[in-house]
Length: 328
Image 1: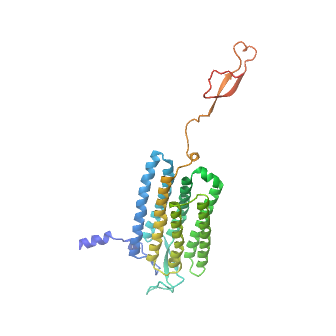
Image 2: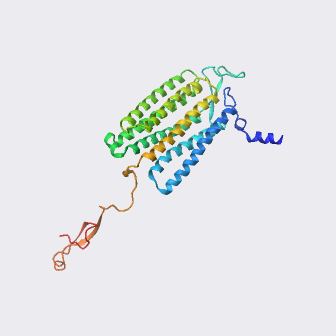
Image 3: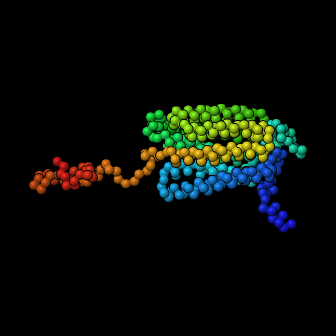
């Protein structure tokens, strides 16, 4: 009996400690177990990236530091989000539009569904970092001289801002739509689809034309955006259409998150550090340059002409020139 009690205490108690009151379609212990598993994966990856980041910070390897910072930040945010959802926190109750999922004791028809807004917050924070890492990988692998022939610095910034803004729009659109009970939620879903369509166009146009994405880089890009479009399907089946259970929705979103925010950043990181090099202008240099000038006073005239004109003039003298040269 004591052993059974200890095993019970060692199990997942999140649903009991943080119960979901006032909802009909909600997370179960099995769903919480899946969320804890995903949290463990992201937490482990965050620890690994943190160790690598500290190691390369000490060594001063610029490209590795710049590249690793992105997946490290993504893993930290996703671990935070999945810890929250696995603990049955970060949610609100919204009456579903359709009655596909129902319970025997639901108070209203359709029932109240548990909507986890914590995942939308995580996407809002991590999507710009993923876009930054994708851009960084393309820039460092193509070479600065080749990139300068195809695009300018302001075009790169302009494109990245458009990508980030469009991604934020699609995430906020899905979040707002999930919090609406009426059919108007599909209007926000449609706007989110339109925004992501524009982002996809900008990304592929820029990657194929300016950054010449081929081979492994193109394969990573196709995988990323194939998964991104599946987010709309997952939303329509879960938070939007109430077709699948809350647990099934977390499984769908969890698999997509593991692919987009764990596998893809790892592939981008490996591509960047193996094929890329940081442009020389982006690395901070210390010390004096060879052509640096120093300023020193030189007295004009010689001893015999001192009585006629004892003027002191400040001129620039090259380091390589002799200091005893008299400027006429």
